[in-house]
Length: 267
Image (cartoon, rainbow, N blue to C red; front, side, top):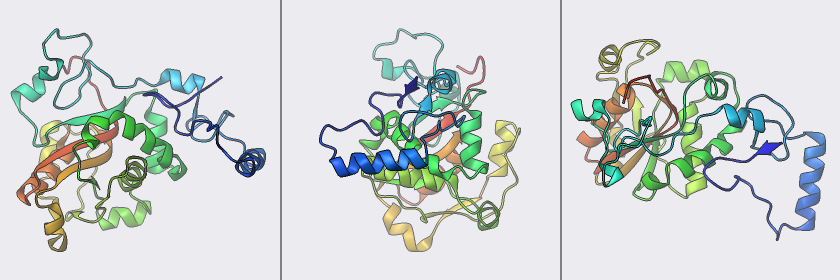
């Protein structure tokens, strides 16, 4: 059994008009390199899919959720309109970004997929994740002028060889038809890993760590920006990015991530 992407149709549905040559080419490629599950490497029907077992382990983020940070609620709040529902954290301390959304909850079911992209060189999965992001972030994309990945410091980029957030942003840009400003935002300080730090410690760790490149100031001013990252934990990193972009004149900053941490009782 294979399962396509969440949020509706598979990323690459079978098209009735696919040419005979195209079908033969795909058959030949799948014969030489059989499609594998993005997570467990089990054989699946088409490229960029999850097997049924892996798909079933993932908890996809959906309503009801916080209208601001996208934290999923355990039950319907009953508020009308539903868009007015806010989590305790956003009521207590509104974030710098306007809205945040995520594809899935970061837990045992999704951790392998996220870490494989981030540290395991599974860059081939980025196009599939771009489709997932486009579906989960449709509301934000409708109001976005451009996409922007959360940057890595050059030293860390040299060691890792790629920025997973940039890969996701470019994949999303292709899927959604939005331009990507990949180098407008820069990390000016090589911060230590956020790891298991508390929210307060994370905020302090990224304080002053980001800046808009002077040559890109005009491209940020008066733009509605959608920040793209792999995981939203406490929001400290994307808040630091949002603060810098807003000071540079951005109209608003939204956030879209592949996964987000959900702590029990956080809502």
